[in-house]
Image (cartoon, rainbow, N blue to C red; front, top):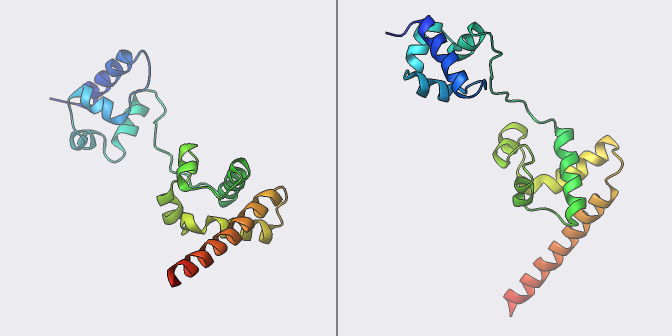
Length: 158
């Protein structure tokens, strides 16, 4: 039968097995052979955090901080300059930049395809300097995109 005390003991054992590293929630449950429901029954809501506190550790709670729009735009501008072109999402993802495409959509209500326009708007509206090259690249890319569409129209008429 599991009690708060046996959970604390199992937590300490699990920590020792990780050479003193703080076990993640799922690691502990597997090690202790218990499930979330039992842990909640013993400790209440935020059960694993309470267990970690009882063991003298700081809870390793997942931080879901939103990336500020200024950070996103600065990273985007830097990426445009680095690549010398409007980046595909794969380039953003490859560099592990945040937010993800879905986070951008859900949190900031923007699509990746809108980033060039939103970036130029952000720089202009906020009077940000240092991104002149990025704006030039974006504007040139937009012009080239228009030329390609004109060629597509001419091709489809043939």
